[in-house]
Image 1 (spheres, helix red, strand yellow):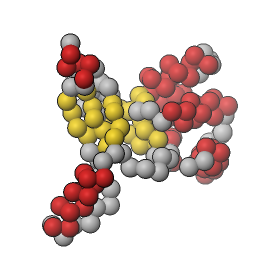
Image 2 (tube, rainbow, N blue to C red):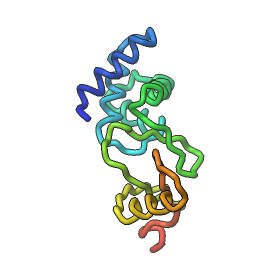
Image 3 (tube, one colour):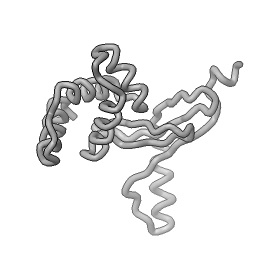
Image 4 (cartoon, rainbow, N blue to C red):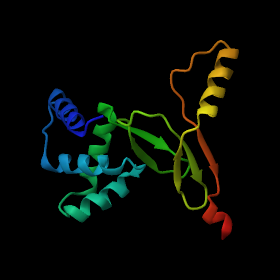
Length: 145
């Protein structure tokens, strides 16, 4: 999805909620959309703070909640007790490999897995509307150490 459309949608959402579109919220959105990583509020705060030290943690946290509420971000739990946010504006579906040692998250796509899920669902008379696949283990680096 086009970043300018996402920004327009977010501004419209803020107007509907009776909230202001501020420069700080815009900066937070720009940084969030920069690479689509799985960011915690703290991760995003550290990135935003390097560009604008006047933006506080609470502002970043509340803005992430607004992103989730308006549908441009989704909260994710990867088993480490920390909520992360992932952009919902990426069109392709992907699954995750999560290292239980270092916390590394690898996105992957596999048509065979997608096909198998559809096959299993059909065998049970089930129609999949959405799903998440998170595989937990140790990454190559952690296995070596």
